[in-house]
Image (cartoon, rainbow, N blue to C red; front, side, top):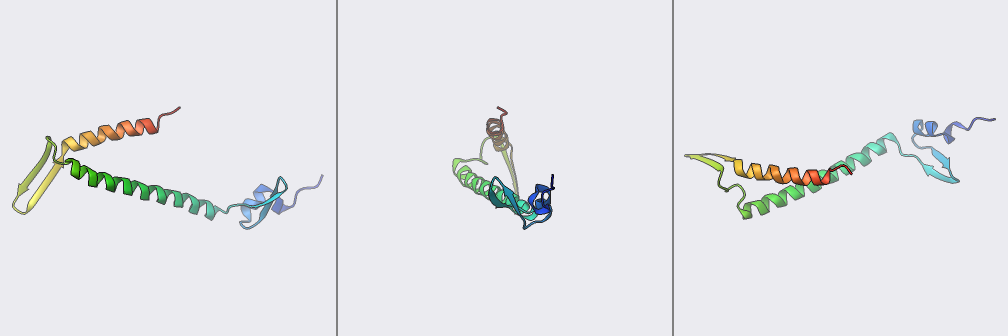
Length: 108
């Protein structure tokens, strides 16, 4: 029994980044470690971008709906100094996020 050439084994393909692997009669190029990292980072950046867009839209709509000016939101103004503590808005945001994340991350 002869041993398969080095470039035809999966271990060899992982060590040699630009080698081709013979599998089911098709020749497929394996991904290098760097390509896996770039693919993962690409997905992460797309997810972060979409998250920022959603948060931005929520800030715009929240300001129009009066969030930040609910009873229970504290604002102190002294001359040119202002301190805002949106307690009621924070509680509502916490409840909504808890419900949404529980629905999305529920184990099936």
